[in-house]
Length: 417
Figure 1: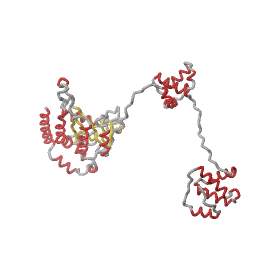
Figure 2: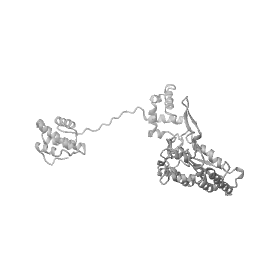
Figure 3: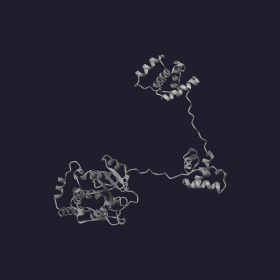
Figure 4: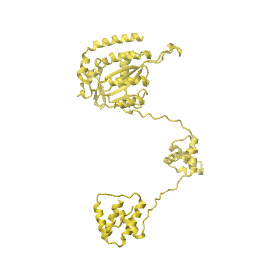
């Protein structure tokens, strides 16, 4: 910072007023201090009157952006010493309580005890000095638990410890661990897999016989509020077979999907599924540990629908395509339009305990439950209307559809057998 020329006091006043809305700022503290000292000397600040001193102070404040209080403090320093200098920063450094040898000693103790917890290690260090009288443990006997961990993080500690720990796998952060709360809204799916069993040991051929030991997998999707259900069948639960099924089933639901809840199986909790759901703006959630009811709805459907329909006998994996076609063309429409489900009414008894009661009017098909929701049109996907779904429901009666479905089922089973 330099002054091109020395302005008179009246000129300084005009300069300050003319640049009232403009602010300047010094880049370097040392340079700013030198410029302030030079300015005070050039204007012979010590011999100026009170009014003239105020103008010079205002000028310096304007040019440096320092506060008026700070400029006055620097001015007093200049009047006393005829110079200004920047005080060097002094970093406060405290002497360490624990020495290099103490850290090495802690590493030796951890080696011997295979790295106990902080409180347990502290007790060992205290006993070494108090009970066994080892003078080298005098300082470590009073160490805090938190400082034990501080020393364990030091480079010197790791240089002197030879205890090895098992490699920990990456923590799976995919999915939110919670129970879905739909609040009487559609689009909160519960998903689970059902395995059709393995080939019995006495029927398995040689390794080169070409026989697959694994049976088909049924994938069950159930909406929590309406019990709208879609079932699919795949050969394996790997990404190659699962991803197309997930896409097609999500598209098949007549309403918008908001959350996809599964147990902790890797067929659902993986990066590929998470990426697919993220593109569709669907939340991925998973069951909590030791909370067996988190996915109870779909698990009851596994037994009451899939096992009742397909049984427990082994079905070879290569039949998955035939079964999936039957699910898509017959079974899923039967479940949603022609098979009544029970919807519980929650009551509270005199003790304040919740009880679920199934009344006669609580039994209805998933579509009728969907239709009974208030302002149901807000949940439907674009292009899906109640009139369109009504025509699909009215095409056949419940019993007529069940007969046609079973006829197609027996034809499918004859091919499988």
